[in-house]
Image 1: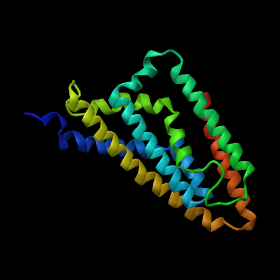
Image 2 (image 1 turned 60 degrees about the vertical axis):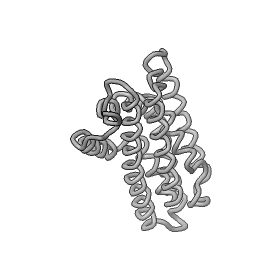
Image 3 (image 1 turned 135 degrees about the horizontal axis):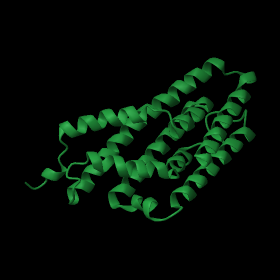
Image 4 (image 1 turned 180 degrees about the horizontal axis):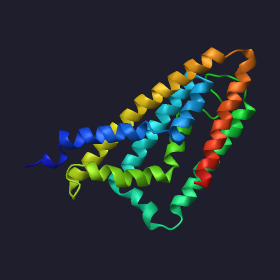
Length: 206
């Protein structure tokens, strides 16, 4: 029947949502990045969460059109992008240290762009989606329906991520508000910078 391949069977979609939620709740670089921005300010945290979500949609598109497979075919491609992403994180950490005590609502390097790059420059996310999404996609054995299903599943994953990371940003900001004062403001910025530096080292050495 025409269009049947693009239909999302609840027996497949519900397990996907449960599996995606479990994976999203597992702390990783994206969560720690949003946490570091949320400590600096709610607006910065929410922008970072939006950027990460955009990165997930970017990786979904790469899987849907088959570009993500390049990480498996070109030797060293995955490692090169991984190092680039780690270096970018280290840069953000140093930048945050240098701007400690500044405008908390918009710390240096903060924003949607940085959140997007953090996620987009992580080839492990692309490889994970390459292995994860097609397995749940309706009609993944072939045809146009498979690509459509991958996009829908990726969008679902992105939506769940946006809700979770948005909550992380708000909670981090609320927790920081308890400590925030003229004396602790600089210290909180330095803590955010330290988190970014640690994530960068983690990604590079991973």
